[in-house]
Length: 90
Image (tube, one colour):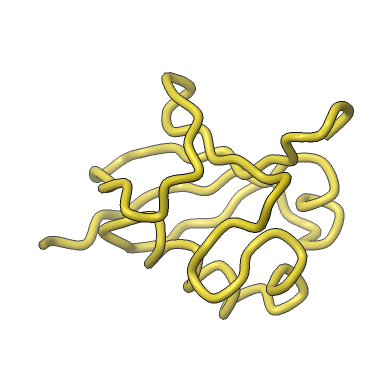
């Protein structure tokens, strides 16, 4: 399985904690991506990601086409992933 260069955009409380709008990563599946996000931004580990999975209350939107929490979702080069709170108000 090939790793793909993807962009993660942070919204709401996640953006506040990271202090950035987006970051670039190279991963082949969402579980790999969430592990990398937690490693690069340890302030998110245990908040919205935990050991390669999204925590309850958080969703990923891939290219604005679909929302998912599935950790085994395959990523493609150029994917744009929104990481956001599923709660009202983000």
